[in-house]
Image (cartoon, rainbow, N blue to C red):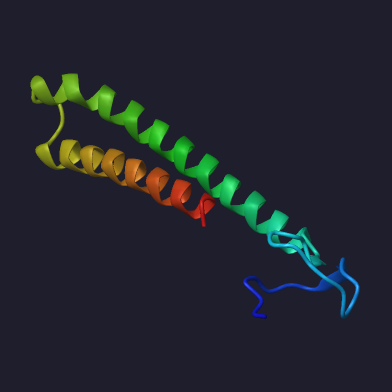
Length: 99
């Protein structure tokens, strides 16, 4: 038998030498470290969403100014890159939630 996860064993749910069924829970481990990891991943996602929202608002403000040449092309490019980076950060944070 091999452990599929690491953790502190809280209890064993079977009788040693007894029969076990397929899919039966054999051990219960401490869930607190995993709950903390989940909360951290959810916070990372919330932060990425907030940063993306801010970058999107900045980009929307700059687009009309860029059309009238009120800002430099570099400023517009930076705003576009920040918005794209924010979108990628959301995808990355969502992936960490599914690990």
